[in-house]
Image (tube, rainbow, N blue to C red; front, side, top):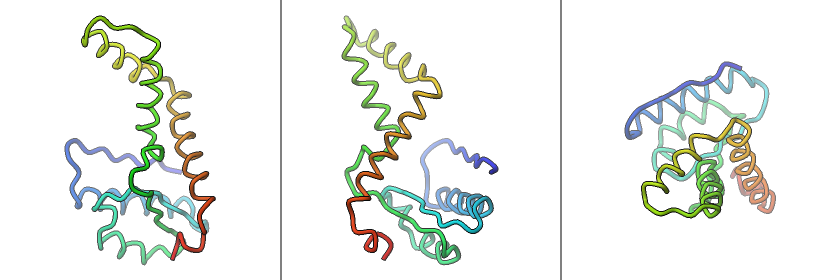
Length: 140
């Protein structure tokens, strides 16, 4: 599958997200033509715009599943922050500068395996949560 590469510096507007989402759907549907797909998003306003709902009508085998509000455990970056905070407890700092240097060295020093573990933890948290729900209600 072709990798989707979409980088945007600065704040994200509805238009930028809509462009990204359209490209994401095109890429996924091209790679997984016959498969049912579920795209997981949080409740950001641009994720629930009328544009998104209109685009989704063109992809009947693709569903959007929104995470519940206040669920940082469903975010890989939040899982990374939690892990980093745990690691920081192993050290004593004499200044804010020492703390800042350690945070930067930890967060930019994670290898691919560690970074993937944040995504695996996120997926595991989501699966655990959603398997407890009534699946018929998720997509209706």
